Amino acid sequence: MVPDIVARTYLMEQTMVAHRNLRIAVIGAGASGILAVIKLRAAGIDDVTVFEKASELGGTWRDNRSPGLTCDVPSHLYRYSFEPNPDWTHVCSPGPEILAYLKSVAAKHDVERSIRYGNEVTRAEFIKGRWHVDTVQGSQGVFDVVLTAVGVLHHPVYPDIAGLDTFEGASFHTSRWDHSVALEGKRVGIIGTGSTATQIVGGIIDDVAKLILFQRTAQWIMPVPNPAYSDEQKAAFREDAGLIEAEYARLAVEFNSKFAAAVVGANPAHYEVMSQLCQDNLRDSVADPELRAKLTPNYKVGCKRLIMSDQFYSAIQRPHAELVTDGIARIEATGIRTVDGRLHELDVLVFATGFDTHRFVRPMNVIGRDGRRLDDAWAHANEGYLGITIPGFPNWFMLGGPNSPIGNFSWLMTSENQLNYAMKLIDYVRSGNVTEIAPKPSAVRAFNDAVKAKMPDTIWATGCNSWYIDKNGNVASWPWTYEKFQDDMREPIIDDFEIA
Ligand code: NAP
Picture 1 (cartoon, protein in one colour):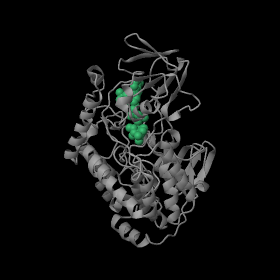
Picture 2 (cartoon, helix red, strand yellow):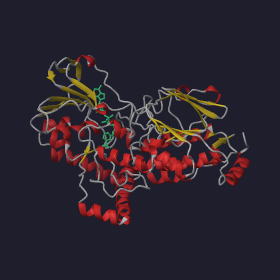
Picture 3 (spheres, protein in one colour):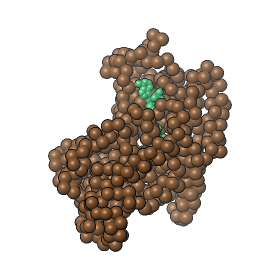
Picture 4 (cartoon, protein in one colour):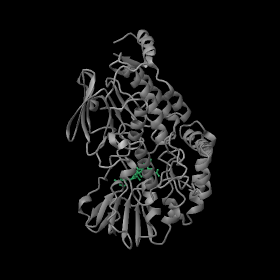
């Protein structure tokens, strides 16, 4: 190891001069993977290979195509900073529009020439300063740097319910929506009441003969209208990029300084506003006291991912909709039997049961320095440093690793900040004088201790079950504000890294 002070001085002198042509492997061709290719190439790194398990790019927006799917982050924040889009149709745009945006940006920057589709990475091992990468198609050779861009919402969870395979109608997970199944005139059951399920309820209620929503836990619903941008507004955005930036700035205040700050305890006044809005929404929108009681959560607003919808309550009160809160006893050939003995007959069954958000790159077998397996390193907790690096896994950078802001900020803005930070570390490797860079265990400990100490201030830690919390009770998100995130991403603290 190079002593810190020497390393720092030396690195500073070297960063402006690129001596090595790096080979970089990017894992995943979703929003973050597309971003990585564009920014790495712009920095003059052209030897970039993206390994993508599917046959199409787009990540979560490729996989999730359920009816009604709409991003709950405003579109002018949910974009790459270098590709503002004047043509977003709504403040929060539908899923297909976001996929189209990602595809158009990728096409404009010729990203696909770097992608190897049908290449799920199965193994990566760090040997003598380089990563040896295998995919389902065999060895892919050796890389200086690996950047993971695998997203968070990509391992669907199916419910552990008896008789799951006995249902004779059509059934599928929301992220594997079977568009060959017509819903018109059908009796459709949905298990789950997260963001996905509630959007589907609004998305299909007009088509189906009967909709039954099986709710295990009630959700708070924030009544957020989703206005369309008028043709005049879009034309103005096209003519004057300054107007897009003004819209961005307006939405950033609403989203980052109000909502995102409120959920981490940094804007209590706005938290009260949000909380009151949700309570008023329930009281004012649901007339029947029995239904209202069923829809009333027993935890604080925002503890689970807050649902933004101005459609759900009206949809669930339609005469052909039913909210079932009795537990599910089993799934049978013709429907779902609840614990009260009632059989709810169904033609189609939708599992809106979410994702395993704590697997990150796994089941990939990642082996770092000295043969250390990531599975072992993360056996008790997924611990990294600032969501990007892992001790003992040099030159391995994650976009969206543990304790990244998964529930509070725009994913695209998060990725861009993290990539800028990672590229500063990659620059050291590129200088030719550094072959390995990984965070010091002491820095990682300090970061994770700080996360743990701050987490009780957040709304996620106030006593509910959610996909933010792992099996050991650790909350997996970023417990600080967006402003702190930006500050932390601005420049790596090089003393926090081991350099060889
Ligand atoms: P989710 O929030 O994890 O919700 C899963 C639902 O399934 C919960 O209601 C859960 O109940 C229920 N469930 C799980 N297993 C069950 C079982 N065995 N029996 C009965 N119910 C069961 O998943 P999601 O709705 O797919 O949303 C995940 C995240 O994706 C969102 O929070 C959001 O970040 C993102 N998303 C965003 C958008 C958007 O931008 N608008 C749209 C869709 C998704 P419990 O609550 O009791 O566990």
